[in-house]
Amino acid sequence: MKIEEYLAQGGVLTSPENAPPRYRAELLRLMATFVDSELAAAAGFAEMINAGPGIPERIAAARIVMEKTAHAGRVLRVMGDFGANTDRYVGAHPWADRLERDADIGTTRRAGDMRLSVFNYPFSGWSDSVAMHLLMGLAAEEQIGEFSRVSYGPLAEVFREIAPVEAAHTASARKGMEHLAAAGLQASVDYWWPRVAASFGHDISSRAALLAALGLRHQTNAELRGCWERRAATALETLGLTAPQG
Image 1 (cartoon, one colour):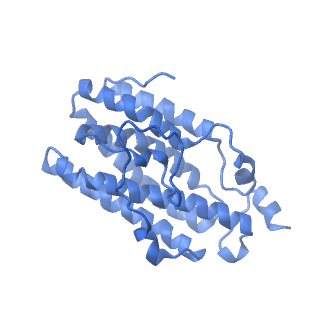
Image 2 (cartoon, rainbow, N blue to C red):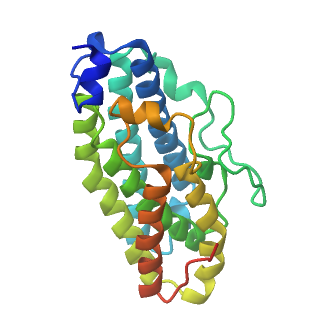
């Protein structure tokens, strides 16, 4: 059986040596998007540590920065198995760089930087960072759940181990929002909602069929975003907040 047929039937690869060129390219793209996003997220939250209103909040923020950086490192090691230059990778971009607050780049990414577009926007303060963290954390849970089923076994295992830690980050954000005034959070929710939604990509993707055939995707962008919208709307409602419409 050809490798492509094996993958299309749900097969799992365990070594880079068995991966066809197009599979390698798409798998590296997936991993780079995750690594770049985690490094950019960690850099952004690092700047918020000292904005925390108390010691517990600052400890929680510092732990999230440490764990997101560690998650990037774990996936980067898998990239190294495919030939990525892991020694130079982390220093390749200024991960803390952000655009202006009122920028609107949709799903656009900067050349050579695979971070999700949402990580190009700055925080306006502690409360704003917590609101973004909750929305993006729920989105990350959907995305990592999808990555946990990819057809490259060693990477899927890494994501399965990462998943509960990322879920704990989301729970921390939810707890943090419970102690903040809902009136001041709605504006942040309205700001971050469309930017987090954009992290799922376009509904119609020219690569969707290929990724599905390679076992690198099992749900469409629209399906993943729909799951996130429902979970996020419910989480916001329990906090006295409203999910934006449209």
